[in-house]
Image (cartoon, rainbow, N blue to C red; front, side, top):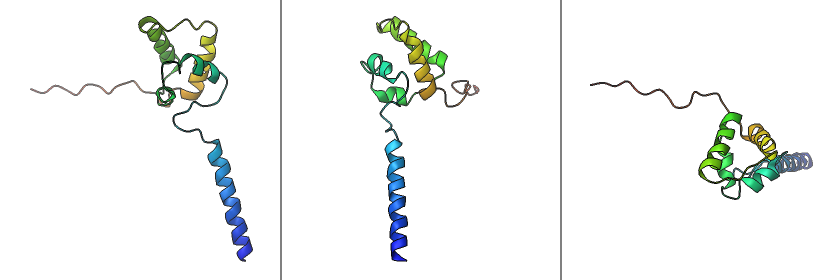
Length: 109
């Protein structure tokens, strides 16, 4: 009986370690097609945490890129822009549909 319990516990610990090894820490980018481009273009100025904590639609990601190109001299991304947007949308796309901020509270005199 003792052997079976010990074997079951050992197998459970091995399974937990295998699952834990696949989890990506919160401050690292997901591995996937295009992650090397995001690392090359985005992590030059930003930490990975800024991307990881974001949840934007493809259009919002593109608007963010355009803003950085206008205001912060981000270089043209050329053909790589589509791959970057594909990666960002797949891994850090909008988690939920929202209209943005809540409506203003009514004004009372």
